[in-house]
Image 1 (cartoon, rainbow, N blue to C red):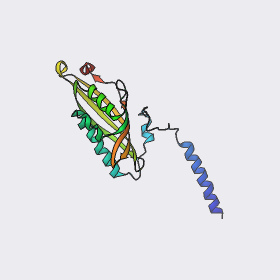
Image 2 (tube, helix red, strand yellow):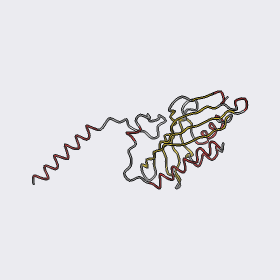
Image 3 (spheres, one colour):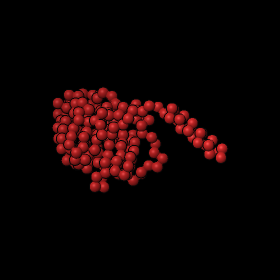
Image 4 (cartoon, helix red, strand yellow):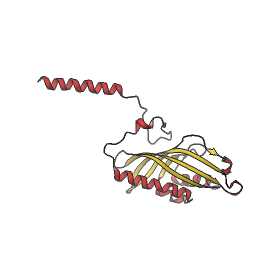
Length: 192
C-alpha cells in the first residue's frame, strides 16, 4: 500500500523537476513566413527515436531535385518539389512568393543573367505525421556571371526551412523560408 503512494509522489516530483529544467523554447509555426532562428533549431528539432526512414528518404530525394531544376533552369519542374499553393519566403530581395506559378516566374527572372551551382549539405528531416514533415537543409548557392561579368561570382550561404505535405503520394514543399547565414559574397552586379 505504501509503495504505490511513494511511486506516485516520486513521479510527481520527477515530472515537476523536469518541467522546471526545460528551457523556454519559442513556439513553432511551420506555415509562417517568419523563419525560425538558427540559434533555436538545435533545441527544437530533437533526434527522433524511431525515425520514419521511408518518408525521410522520399523527402530527401524530392529536395535533391531542387538544385538540378534551378541549375538546369527548368523552372516548370519546380512542380515536382513545391505544392501548387506553396508559399516561399526567399528573403530580400525576392521576399514572399506565392503560388507556385509566381515562385517559378520570379526565380526564372532573378536568375536569368547568371548560371548557378546549388549544393545541399547538412540536413535534418522531422516527419511530424503521416502527411506532414519539416526539414532544415543547408545550402551553398554559387552564381556565375555571364557576358561582361564572366569570371565573376556571388555566393550565398544559408538554409532552407521547409514544411512538407504529402499530396497524392508525393511529398511537396508547402512553406519555405530561406535563411541567409551571412551576407552574399562576391560581385552582386552579375545579377544586373
